[in-house]
Image (cartoon, rainbow over the protein chains, first blue to last red):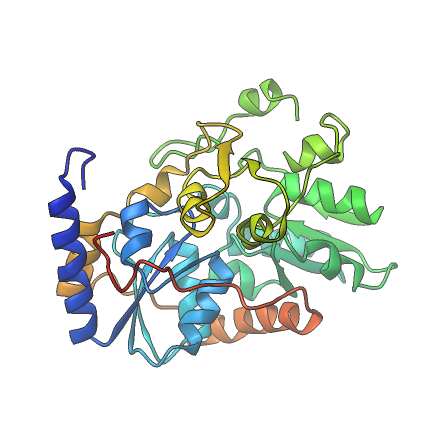
Length: 203
Length: 125
């Protein structure tokens, strides 16, 4: 879809998508950050975890996930019997890409006994190596639920991690420090945000 | 933004640090009519649709996740036509990942997180 597409074209496409979704017994879900016309064609709009849970609840056999790759993976994790489709495989996430399963395993080996808390913006492989998932809304609560004398590894968002550490006053919480964040400026096929950018933003 | 407020660079008066679903719900229960929204600009569409009498301003027009914009209507249609691209997770990995998610949900901080868009019945709107 280009910005020059007419309103009629959009309406026609949306009607065709709805018709086919019905034929395929598919549910279409879209993240809050998707294009307006994609949000408007969806059965549900929400955040990544909410959508995955919605996908798990539906009776549909097929889930078309209009979001990014790690979200579709999370939907597949919560709905192993359903077919999860991602319309474009190029939909990645620069934040999720800052740590993979091998890197997390290596980090864990440096901190034996530590509890791993991962933000939802991670691959399934990283979630599998984690003790807890968290969202921005419950990260503080999750961290506070972990005994004070237990070391914590928090990843992959260093800004959320720094905030949680400040709010909880937790001294034994290590935060994955890679200079990528999801916004602003995540552009496919380029490197994550540069350190220069982050310094310029005075974080 | 969270960092800026947390570090004291922004006056916390009037600032709510919320998850994206928290941002969706806040205008409905707030007495304010004008909101500065400091997250990805795509959320403005839903905020305006669900709160037609209130006004929303992006904290930055540059807060655009390009990955979220690669999905277009023709690609959604093609996805349904060809049943592509299926995303699968190896069962052993999925079982372990599920455990991390379930442990989070057991602690709480969760509530029903999504809504059916009002325009679905009439997608031309």
